[in-house]
Amino acid sequence: PKNDHASASTELYLYQTWARPNLVAGAFRTSTDPLTGAVTRTATPANTFYGSLEAMDADLDSAFQKAVNFADDDGTGGFAGIAPVGNAFLRAVQTGVATRDMWAPDASSDGLLDLWFDDGTHASKYGSYLSALTLFGTLTGLDPALLGANEIAARDL
Image 1 (cartoon, one colour):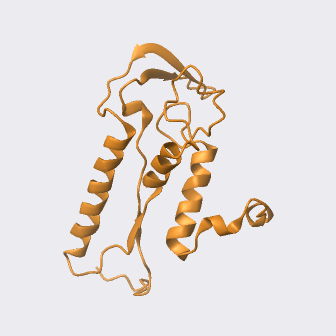
Image 2 (cartoon, one colour):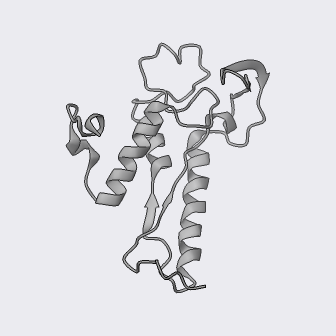
């Protein structure tokens, strides 16, 4: 049915998810306490489906692009694009800003950002911030790096 509140100028973007360390070789099963939310790593290897973050990211890239192409095929205009959050996560890992292996013995002391929460699935506060910067850049067309290290607008909000 027709949506009388729809706006022809509205642009829709897909939010690309990130490669999940808990689905990459070398991962361990985790246990989450239902009361506290604390996540504990077990010594049991997890069922994994990818050999690397890169392999999973490539699959995600392909799947999101197929979704955009499919949505375009029905003549409604589909999506304006993809907010490449997953690509941003991978770039942070590949450039040495973020930890690649959250289960490595030195992961908590390697001086790198941990983009994933302890469950290997969800974003940590750093991953969430990177997601927000990626969304900002995608939606505005501005480079988030222009905000600079001393930007306080988010704090003031």
